[in-house]
Length: 123
Image (cartoon, rainbow, N blue to C red; front, side, top):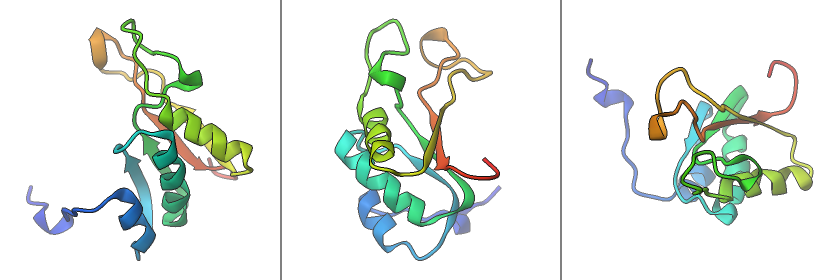
C-alpha cells in the first residue's frame, strides 16, 4: 500500500502546528515532550482542532502519578496536566486504557496510553 500522498512530515513543535492547523481531526496522538507544562498547553490547542466525538491519545499517562510496571518508573506530566485542566474547569474525560490484548512492556499487557475527549453525549 502506498500512502505517501496521505502522509506529511513536519519539522515543528506540536504547539506550533496545532496553533496554525487549518483542518479538524478525528484523532490526535500526543507523544512528544511529556512535561506537565507542555501537555497542559497541547491539550487545549488539540481540542480546538478536534472534531466533535473525536479523541486525543496520550502516551505515558500514569494515573495518580504512580508506576505501572515493577521498575518503579513513571512520567508525571500527562497526568498532572489533565488534572490541572480539569481543576480549572476544562470539561475533559480521561480514560486510561489500562491493559491491551497484546503483550506490551516488560511482558505485561499494561499500557500507559489514555484517551482524552470532551465530556458530553456520545462518549
